[in-house]
Length: 321
Image 1 (tube, rainbow, N blue to C red):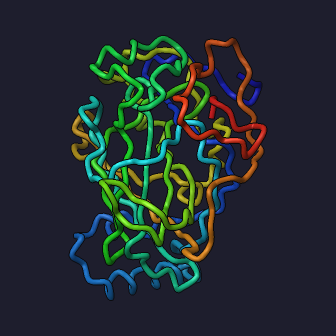
Image 2: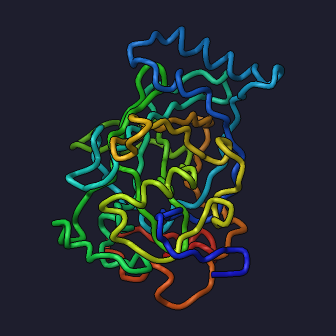
Image 3: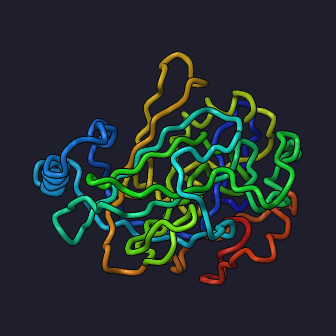
């Protein structure tokens, strides 16, 4: 790794990995954990009022709704993800319930009902479905050891369509890590398309970004099975090539343990994404992150499927992001 990236041997499994590219992150401070996890039947009027209140809260030092900046989608994106709430597809790991609220920053932070939110991330050992020959770095069990044997798997990928409050909910697992990235989840927000044949077709991509996890929580998670079977170097948030160390504005999730004394019971994570639903943003921006240097074993390797999209948006976008 470069001088700005600290190499650490995982004994307590600290930070993690997920792909990306480079970030230009302007952000959106989350409107609040309690609001984000409110019951889905909350009225649109209430949600709009809450969003408007968060937009004006800056005058009193509170959270404010801000347009999120985009990052490159990374090398592990695949088209055709399924519309589904539970994306685990049998993968083992610490449960994660993820709530994402989509707001229109051009219209008083009103909820974007009908927005299609797409996420994808690696499994507990750093493997992505569709790219199972890519080495996550360090020492990890073979991806096939947990029953996933082919690159046509679709685990840990999926869409949900936002309700009247602009909210989607996913049931997944806490991501693992791979060299040289910190722990993260990829996200895209689409509008104007429709559900078709089990997936989401057409429309416009309005936002492409990444969601991040607190280092201390990640450290605790990675002491647990099956995460602890993956050993090696990791990258903390402050040293990640994508995360800009700016909290919720840069995609940092608000996390709450389901059981305070037992992290294996899972976490709830929430964030608010501010988008411009009239703009197209495919994450094709360049950025300042340079993949850390190191031995060939420090970065993911392997050949993506022949039909996988490539990311040529930036010279720095590679299989290490």
